[in-house]
Length: 272
Image (tube, rainbow, N blue to C red; front, top):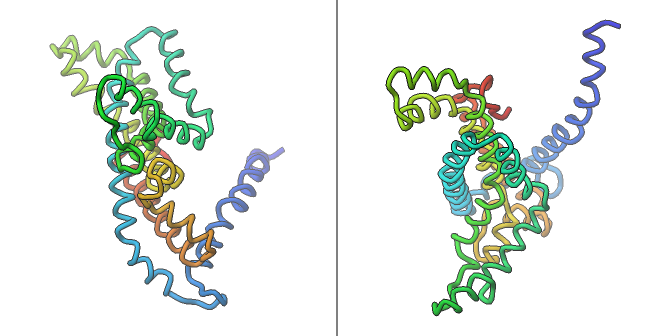
C-alpha cells in the first residue's frame, strides 16, 4: 500500500473530527456574529460589544494575575522537583495530576465550603480568636479558584522542560566557576523558557474564558467574559453571545501566536 495513501487514511478520522467539532462550530459562530434575528447581515452585534469593554478588561486582568501567581509558585516547585529522587518525582507528579482527573465543577464548589462565611476557614479564624472575614464574592476568591484549578497546567510543562536539560551543561557551568544561582540564571532559566511560555498559555487561556469559577466563588458579584457569554446564550441572544465568543477566540489566538513566536517549539511543547 502506498505510504502517502496510508498516511491520509490514518489521518482521515482526525480530519473528520476536526471538521465537525472545530471548523463547523467556528462557522456557526461567525454566522451568528454577523447576522440579526432574521438572518440578515449586520454589524450591530460587534458595535454593542463596546458596552462590555469593562468586562473584557476585568477578565484580562484577572487572568494575568492568576497566570503570574501560577508562574511564581510553579517555577521554583518544578525546579526543586527535578532535584529529588526519581521515585519521589513520580509520586509528586501523580499528586499534581490527581486534581486534573476531578471535575472542575466539583473542585470549584469545594472551595465554597472552605471560603463561605460559615466555612472551614472562618471557623478556624474564630477558634483562634479572630473575627470572620468575607472571602466569597471577592476578586481574591475568584483568582484563588483560577490558581487552584489551573496551576497543574503550569507545573507540568515547566517540569518537563527543566527535566530534559542535559546535565552535562550544568557540569560545564560548574567547571567554569558558576555557583548554584548562576547556573539557574544562565543555564536553567534560558533553556526552560519554552516550558514557561507553554505553561503561561495553558493557564491564561482557560482563566480568561472561565465562568463557573466566577459564578461560585464570586457569588454572582463579579462578571467575566464567560459569564456574559453564558447569559447571552441562555436569554437567548445568540448573535451577541457569538460576537463576544468571536472576540474572545481572536484574543486567545493572538495570545497563543505571541507565545509561539517567542518560544522554541522543538524544545518546550509550546501549543499550536
